[in-house]
Image (cartoon, rainbow over all chains, first blue to last red; front, side, top):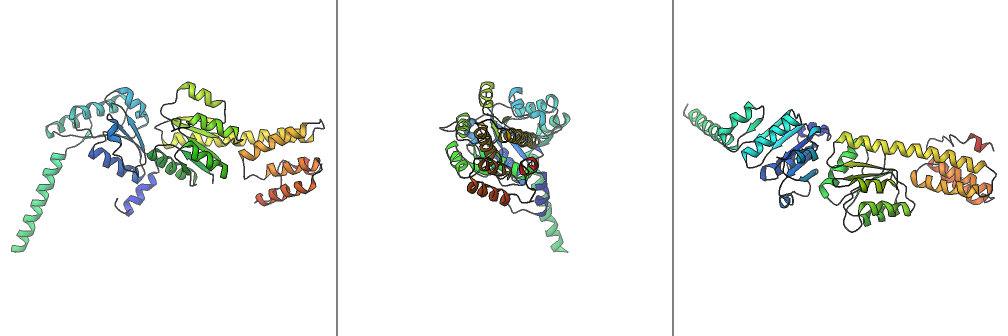
Length: 159
Length: 207
């Protein structure tokens, strides 16, 4: 875990007043949950597969619920009506979309962020008011930035 | 500043509870993984509040509460569980003061429940105080014994309060045990940081 910067210290004043539900306990969901709980968010992970929860590291401080988040009952159990932020991180776009929509439309969660595997789907998510994070797009952008920076430094050297 | 014990077999829930409670009430809660450890800790020290899960290994939460009460520990208890059935709660409520909070919960919900329990504790302490005073000053034989029982409960509810010691001193004095009465009076004075004396005790002191 990184040391606490001034920014993190400021965030620590969040004091667990901010309730976050994270759907999916995969590589991404797990790490996001870890980081948010470390900062001081009140975090609940919702995961279908009980064995995935055993991957939760020792210093994770938060809840874990076993269940299918695509079922309204599961989100209700996770107290989605009190939720400030919903994060969908499963590896399946339709599931993420469905969970995000239930969260936003039925439970009235204003802040919804979703992982989007297929970049073709990003537009659909955004049209529905869901903030979409596409690993493919992020990778492409990062590549592009790195390459451009490299070109700039080469161009700078030539001057 | 309150002393809290958190009993839960899930490490991450325990961790979250400790963090939330320490944030909300400026204290550093102690932790126990199972009911056995918790019972041992309750023998050694008194807590103002205990939070416990129902689903615990070996001894479950309800049994834990039963055993605590049998040992004369009447600390308010907050049951925190995802799976508690209405029957569980109803069964546990006989061992009050008890409240229930479903997992997961928000910081506000937790704070409200804890505040409620602490206030209940204060309220019941005052009720006991009045009852005990009544028994101490009645001249019916046997009432002193009743007063002593109530004072013992008061000790377990608020271990760091001087009031039960003042009351105990009164009782012992009435029985003619001056020596032990003095011990309790000194203990009361030692606990009485603000030297309030015994706030409701004017009638007792002048007796």
